[in-house]
Image (cartoon, rainbow, N blue to C red; front, side):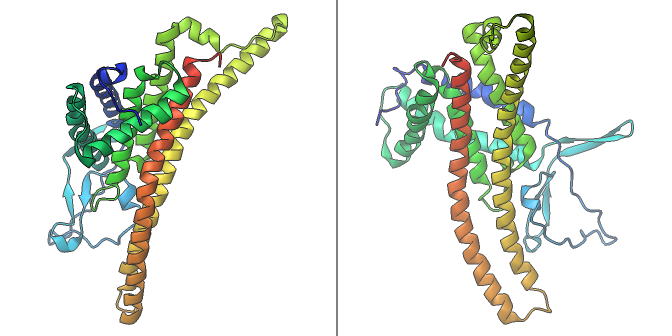
Length: 329
């Protein structure tokens, strides 16, 4: 297995700059994702009214972090402000998913910036932790980017690394108590798909020139004037297919993460429902044991899906990038 070499790979030299640009673009897009505050009106004594648990709270963005009531406050509010623009109410602030995305970006930097500096100095990775982190980068480069993009893959590897790690860490945060998976929100995955769209077609236009790139996808039937209109129709369909491919990237990631976390939350809610006074204690104990065992099994499955969905998103991105950079093939 080939090592990640800073001196030999052009991709790693520009990795930090490309990663920063990608994360800034993603952050700018994600900041526009709407999120509704879910604050309940306080009761007369100042306490929050009792709220039934919902399987959607874990996968829904809000301006608070939900906690168990026994821990003291039922939630931790996040800074935000609401104001009126005409008849519309607009809320701006730091939502839970925005905070988790910033945390995911910080974790990516904390894990990989020291590794990049070490490899840049010429020293090999030391210990199983650094080797495990390097294996992920090597896999993305050698098994995804190079086969899909070709000889000039190293130039685009840093973007694929950033995309893969950012999605992976967001997926994994969904398995942490009181957190959530930002990739289970359609606005976040659409933001990622928009980043991919501009990365793919911007790279192709920069390589071939915008005019040449747009002409490269124009079909040629050689049928005169009638053929020209037919070519234009096929050209329009081709670009509609490009947009659909990017939309499918967003929907696939969102649907898998959303569905998985809804199932996890639903299994836990069984314990709450079975704990009501009208349920026999023996039945509650059996349901609790089965729910915990199911939760453990499903969490292991979600751990696998977290890596799988990050891989699928990155693989399809590199495949579409290769198609745009080498339209003749």
